[in-house]
Length: 95
Image (spheres, rainbow, N blue to C red):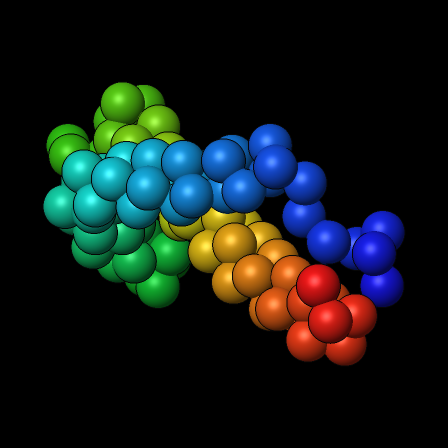
């Protein structure tokens, strides 16, 4: 049970990852949703034309949104699960 507890550096890294991921995901939210709204008609309709808002930059914003969201969820998961492991370790070992 001791080997699965987070280290001190993980206790520092995971909240930073959580905050940065959430910040970048929130900043990229409008661009990602706008890009998604432009992509759906192209995917749904066979003869859909490429909209002018569908640029490479918007595609990068869309990708950055999902990478940031993944970083946020990873940081949140490791922070919460790591805290639970630490709590259980202290509870069962009497530390």
